[in-house]
Image 1 (cartoon, rainbow, N blue to C red):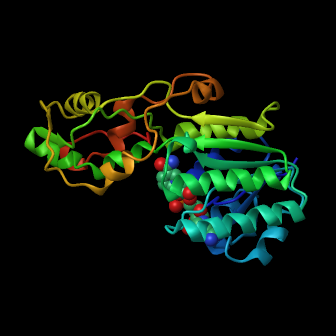
Image 2 (cartoon, rainbow, N blue to C red):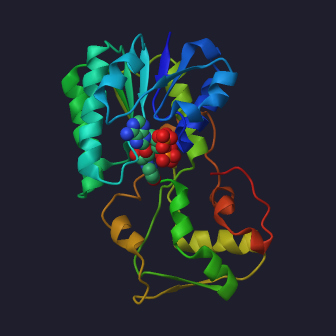
Length: 280
Ligand SMILES: NC(=O)c1ccc[n+]([C@@H]2O[C@H](COP(=O)([O-])OP(=O)(O)OC[C@H]3O[C@@H](n4cnc5c(N)ncnc54)[C@H](OP(=O)(O)O)[C@@H]3O)[C@@H](O)[C@H]2O)c1
């Protein structure tokens, strides 16, 4: 078995590599990276490193040669039209290289969104279905990291957190939990032609986040809804489904996902004396 992983130098890809290497021998895993010169840690572990650039089709066919499983991590380019083209290159190369099974990191509940991001992921899923390659769609929820742009440090300092009005609910996850679940899908049998919604099993609210912040900082932090709050993130959150949940991730992990409190710990400033864990 040859497991080929794209984006292996990225944040999610490197966590998945770590989990995989606890389950399979290093000679069964191939790290595909855009910049091989930054992959010396893999080489030191005896892992084969291949050059793979979604913009350079000619690199991809060779990179995917012999793959019984290809974990295709979606591009991080910030233009979805570019990403669509890059993803088409990956799927064409996977077909030419006769990849036996492609696993794609999609986005949770894409049918419920109406933005370029959700169209991109659905279009990529359709292109994979059209290719006829056996597939698994790993529809990742929003990373809990997004709390990092909601002004938590200022809320802690002020003892009050202002959020945009609304009945907000979030099914976010940590990359670490996703990595554990995705490594299980790659290494266990029975996941071909399946779609998993990799969300937390319960959504959390801003009130629960404020309570977790108070617990972490030992300071009272109240929540106030304020229509004057301006943050681009609310526009984005309002256009995707962040509230539906699925038991898929906990089933794959074989236990509970990381708690909200532990998930947000890495995103709170050291200046408040918060002990940092590895929840991200
Ligand atoms: N669910 C969510 O909330 C969420 C949030 C943000 C992103 N995402 C998606 O999830 C993916 C993984 O997340 P992440 O946190 O691991 O992101 P990341 O750390 O930015 O990793 C993205 C990986 O994609 C690689 N990549 C980008 N463009 C490429 C290209 N042209 N050819 C080959 N490889 C390319 C990067 O290579 P280099 O190492 O060379 O840069 C990197 O390894 C992202 O790429 C994005 O599609 C999801």
